[in-house]
Amino acid sequence: MGLCCIAARRAVSLKKRRIKCKNAPGGTVDLDLVQIHRRIICMGFPALGIESFYRNRYKDVLRYLDHMYGTDYMVYNLCAEPKYRYDLTFFHGRVREFPFPDHWACPLIMIPRFVEDAVRYITSVDHAREAVVVVHCKAGKGRTGLLTCCLLMEIEPSIGGLAKNAISYYGIQRTFDGRGLTLPSQLRYVQYYERLRNEYGGEVPAKVPVVDIHQFHIRGIQAKVTITSCKWYACERVCVISLNASRCCNAQVIKSSPHFTTVNVANNDFFKKLSQDIRVEFLNGCSIVGVLTFHTLFIEREYVYRGLDKICVLKLPESAGISFDFTASLEK
Image (cartoon, rainbow, N blue to C red):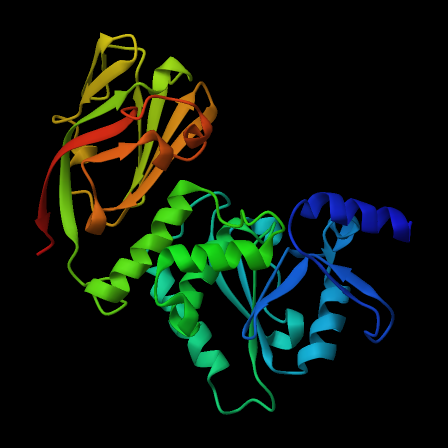
């Protein structure tokens, strides 16, 4: 059973780096866990029950962390899924939560809060030795990578505060193939944090642009993938726009060519006074075939297809993507 579990865990961890420690109290541990920086550990979910057969076993993670770092570690759980949110008494009560959904970018405002909390912990004078933060989501790669890259920009001088350097550093240290953080939406938010540091002192400003979207245009994407509707998330609200009807939800759909669709939403109240984080899911039936996530502080008029989750892997013309006609003003 033990060998089967190890094989299953290695299969689940795919190309992520692992740690094998033979001198841990209670026996050898083989974990989807790696110390990517002297102050940062990244790992897969510390599981109980059936999932512990193919993920990190919580008790093994606890044994390893206690053995290596004593009381000088803090665990950060990024999972929003109820089944992956464990009691805050785990790890001797050294647990903090910054939850957001799997395959999503986190709210932009979460990044400086996480970075501030992690830096405060590792620089505290109360530690007997050099303290570390232990960051995980479910697989310990995407969500973990997003916030870890932002923390690296803050604490690792060789990165020079550059998102591209942090992303490269994380990819090399976390995986064998260097592909640690790959979702365009998550990559975009690491780049946003670089801009926050350079333009806004590392914080999301109190006043961010409020946007009225009048139209959006989908160009070239439907040459390779069918899109039947777009699901928008904004300001804790949701709006679904069908592309199969000429009029739907106070929106007018105009297909000027087989692969070019314009959606006029000027009369739809959902698209007025949008602010903060916006997520657009491109759906084929109930299946998500693409995603765009952005923040109104850094909104652009055009996003090429390589900046869209899932769609980015398709071979499309460079002109393919989504664009917006909008007006913006600062919040009052």
